[in-house]
Length: 132
Image (cartoon, rainbow, N blue to C red; front, side):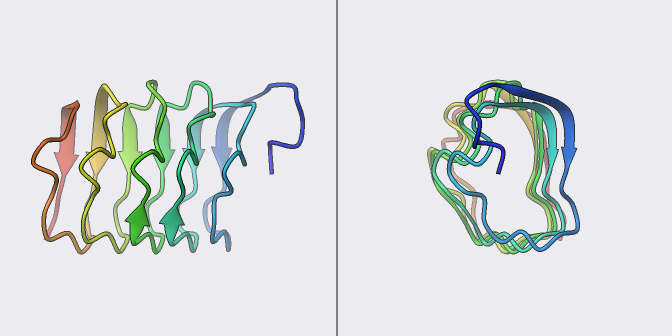
């Protein structure tokens, strides 16, 4: 995807909403500098380890309206992330350490299949949105 070049590429907003994307390759956004990344309304089922680790300056990640059932604990290794939208997916649980590297984040988990949330989330939430 964006990782085929050794040079950094700056894209302020990258909107890939409403496509048929079913996977995010590890390193697919390597060397990309993206602040707002919208992968909503796709067919993503799993978020791999380090999927977003190398996306410099990523502050807003939209993964809503996918089919995400699982997220690797090290999927979001970016300190700059402050908005993560995981609403309208198929998540039943979240790994205990999934947000260990995040400092302050607004997290939307509306319309999932969550039965519990980790008791020891290691970050300060600015907002958590749940809906029944």
